[in-house]
Picture: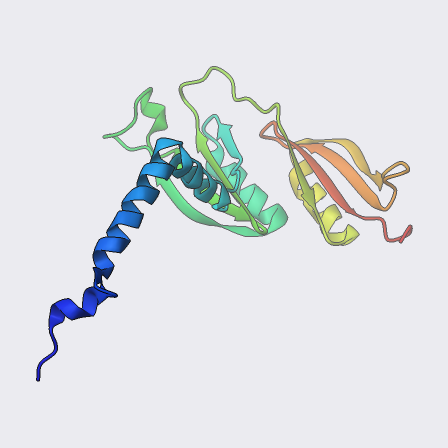
Length: 187
């Protein structure tokens, strides 16, 4: 005796699939009519991990700057592309320069490029890095200060933030760095 395939979808004389489809259709009408689907899509989008990647612009010395920052903090270049004869869009001086570079400084991801469509490079932002020790902070400060300016030397922060030390440096590329480390004399 064979099994009737139609019987697999029948429960108490009703088609299980038919009942399921009717409930699915009612649910669809309920959620799609009042924006629940859009709300659910927004929630899923918001739960994605998003990170902000600082993008620094330079006037032809991007690669030198990135190597300086990697020397100061450690890190690596993840990706680099260059302007060439086929894709430069402003001036032939672009050829060979950095179109886009992504690199790491510690666990932070950063990006940069040589900018030829702007009059001045905007260096108004400040970049703050926490170092684990005073020795690391002093090394970083010395690398960034080469050709740059120490605006304030490494010193303990004032109370109530006196568990740390900080220094402010404007590097030779025009960016301002705030370098901090623990104030071990206070801890």
